[in-house]
Amino acid sequence: MDAHLTAEQEEIRRALRELLVKRCGPEELRAAEATLAGHDPALWEALARQLGLPGLALPEVYGGVGCSVTELALACEESGRALAPSPLLATAVLAAPLILALGTEAQRAALLPPLASGTLTGALAIPGAGLATALGLVGDNHGDWAGGGRAGGVQARRAEGAWRLYGQAAQVLDGHSAGLLVVAAHTGGFARSRTLLFLVRADADGLVRARQTSLDPTRPQARLELRYVQAELLGDEQADVLAALAAVGDTAAAVLAVEAVGAADRALERTVEYVRRREQFGRAIGSFQAVKHRLADVYVGVQSARSAAYYAAWATGTGGERVGGLALAQALESLRTAASEGIQLHGGIGFTWEHDAHLYFKRASGDELLFGPVHRLRAHAADVARLFDGGEVTV
Image (cartoon, rainbow, N blue to C red; front, top):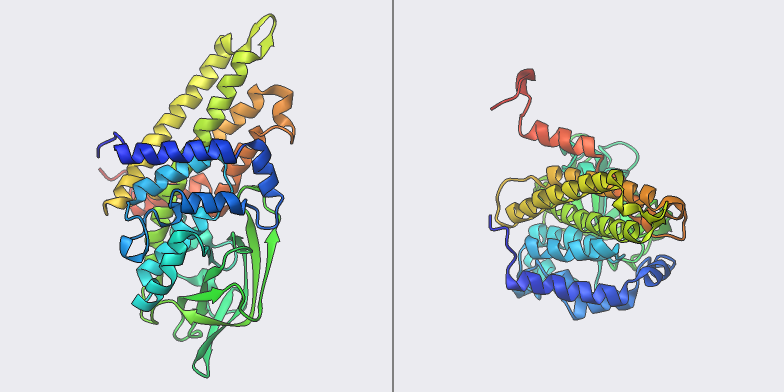
């Protein structure tokens, strides 16, 4: 792995950072959070049209840019620094890769170009609180989160040549504003139980969507109710949905890890700026040795997490080992530590809603709720690597 960024990668970071500094400051961020969609449509249009972010990692034949996962991760690092609310994660990291992996050629040709251009946004709907499990991040994915043949989840039945979905899903990232939903549903009953993915348009009859109150307002979520909604099967009934979800999960974890590193780096940067200005006992509090040591520890944690996250993104893009979950665990821990230290070192102002310090802590806590606690991410990575077979470390 070459740790140096190419000129193209540096240009992506520079252009995106300049745009977000101008268009996603503290006031713009809070205004976007308060909207019904939870993000600024004008900013999303700029990200899509000017920089082509939604199609960054999609093939050129489908209207994408043709870059690797690494470029997409670097773009998300900049959006993470600004905590920019946008459908980028739901569209480009979760929905579009599943359509690319499982869709028929007709589905790819019809759906991927508008997703790549940003004119259509997507969302992945997983029943219950099973997103991390469905993506294979915190445990083996057996598909039982989709309903398992029992009540609950989302059930799919075929009648009169059409698929119908019935059930509900919560905590769906950008599910209230997405134009296209990729819904995981259980079908086949108890005897032939299996999980399939279905495409549902936003204007489908019987679909009810409502934005939920979430811990992290920069990650808008929705609750979906499907009342015998007509849906289109993604791919065919023989598709290996669970394997595709696991592959997308590893890629998503790597991208999320780089994004979390961007947020942690910015939280540390803001804290350093503050302790240089804030005076106590006639001197800047940043000059006290105890404060220096605390921030030095945060810096080491952020840089270590960046190395792990960059490697995970590179390995995913080159078809190497899957280490996204492990990198995500380290990055989320780094972000949580940087945000916690930032709140404490800002003193009283850091605990108020008016200050932005708490938003970084909410991002860390919200991502852990969605994609798995740090200890479960690490435990599953150890299980996959068979690190402790027989109670002993395997060398």
